[in-house]
Length: 457
Image 1 (cartoon, rainbow, N blue to C red):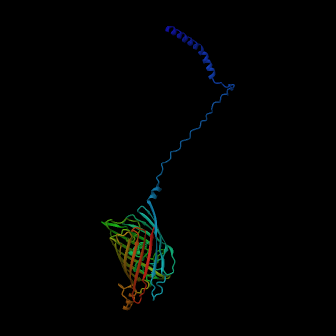
Image 2: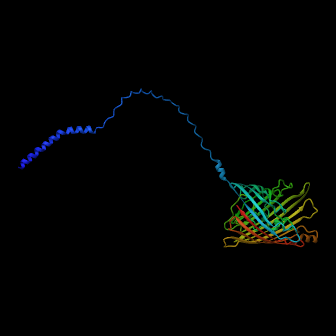
């Protein structure tokens, strides 16, 4: 029975296989008919374009080769400009003065108030360490050395104008208008005065302060100077000198007042501290006390011979000034001691019958900077004496004349205080009070108070 079932199943399988084989081609054709996409109608073929003509080739000749550029020249201007140095600066100096008005002299103590001492502009140019020039202008011009007068006005004037050639530290040449190498007080910068004003033998007595008296100081002159920088002598010592030959009639003068030149000379010997000599600067001689780092000791001697003429043409009176000055400056641990002596003899060349005039003055001051405080406070005291009619080499005609000349002697005591925020701060304030002492019958009650402020830039 099983066998009969298997036989029937085999027959059925064979029949189905044959039927599938017969129907397979028909089904495949039907599937291809359904899956094939409809094709859009094809446009008629376009006519063929005519062939393009062959391209025209233009031959451009190659440009001629450019000449090879020469190598660049060295930039001389860069080297030259780097060798030049330019700087500018200046300072403003304002003051207030009160002069006691004496009962026996109406001209003193009548103009108390504020004064603009200086408004200085300075321009410096230097080429390496060989050549230098300076021009400085004073915008608040007043002349306390050559005497001003009450009621004057401030003007602008030239102060410095010179060229310095410095081939060596020991040999330099300066031509132009410059400070004459005379005494220490005269050579100080107005921005670095230890007191509000200079001492009476140098500055004299101004018209608003008492009996007008000309001092012994010297200002700028026009001429040529042979000088040096700080010449090292070994260790911490140095030598400095200056010899000036030029016009002796002061600054901003067109011509000399005589046919003869004036001669000024000065020699200094200095001892410096452990740091040695200061940095060298290409410039004429200046006051050594203007240096920020002052020497431990500086000794100097100076001389002058100045033939000059006074009066109006054609009635000129010729005179000759011959003088000598000596000074010292010492600084040690905040203590500053300075002193000077000046002597000038005037010979009457035209009026030979008039005796020669001798003038003599001396000054000394002591200052001390208080230590261990944030602000630099420097109190000081100065004593100064001036005899505008002295008698050393020239005797007075009589005892009466000698006593009369002695009555013009002056003795001033000044106490002062200088305050600076720091040692290098470019601003300081000064306060002074001066006790004046004259001789009978020229006694005046003309003590004075002075205050000033200086700002440098």
